[in-house]
Image (cartoon, rainbow, N blue to C red):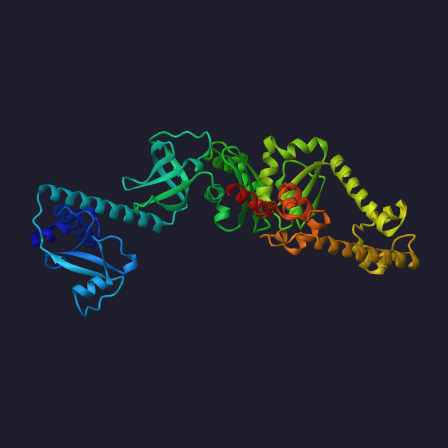
Length: 501
């Protein structure tokens, strides 16, 4: 039996092109499984050890040593007290194994068949692992393969002939794209996933990733591989439209023309691979304003206003450019927003003028109310770019003196009135802040600045805050939408607790 064991291990290792150690471990597992079946004790822990030189093997039953309070499974566990009683003076510790040798049973035909199946499965798993490691070692980004079958959850692709399969999940497939068994397909290597609790691994591919488009372009445009051109950003609506921001590292190169190619040859090659996806090549710019204007191409932008605090850009276009800027279903502005990383708000010149007029009216009212000045003087301050009382109170006096019609007396009066108004409003705000309930102060995500703004808006009780919509909280405090959602959910938590009780 010992010589046969060695011959079997060597033959299987040679036939399956795996390490001999893999075969020995599979044999040990198979023999231990067969031993448990022979003893009709499926739950006991059996270990088989094969001598790699002689082929002789020994069978052991073992128990894990655990503390009294953790003792659960008698077939595979012993308590530390129990083992100390059985073997006085033993030095075995909790977490170690106690083993008893069992006789090597002669296995019948059924047990031998079971052992064979286990050995073959272990070897197949080892082959699959080896093929996967070889695939990963190749470090391929774009993977070419053959469609093996189309399933409900995705496409199974044979990427290493007869050896390794990969999966393109349904969500990583281009919509309305049809493949049949035997079709050639290309996709981006995405990751390796575990399959449930089986220990097996699955290669995951993608055809919707922005990186897939970028890698396809790198294959089509030699200047990218040479470092003369660089793809900085990609935004995709897979199968429909994409925007690619490119930058030239050599000023002698036209990045757009180079990526488009003669008569559109290069862009068409990439587009055909992506089921006819329309691709816009835009110039990348380190200046946000210019980059936004480029990204909204082919629409022409009249002007833009950047709000750094909200990381948003108001894009003003003529009426005849509005539909082009927004795109069908908002596609153009959505892709431009993803490409630039800015929230883009599209509006016409008329809408922008109306909004500016409304904002100016609010500022004008602020100045006439708190500075006790007429509309004409307030209009002058607005036209000069003053928007808050703090600007009037604390900007250098020279800026106010530079305004036509403002002398030192007027400037000093305006500054003093602005400071008095700020002080009065601060005191009123602190008094309002004192009205805020204790349970509202202790909410997660609510800081002192948010409390002050809420108090100024008359929101001083937790239930008042809980009743706000996300948009209302964003408007009052200026926080982003995600933060507003968390604060409102925290404020409403006691409602659900009371309902459950």
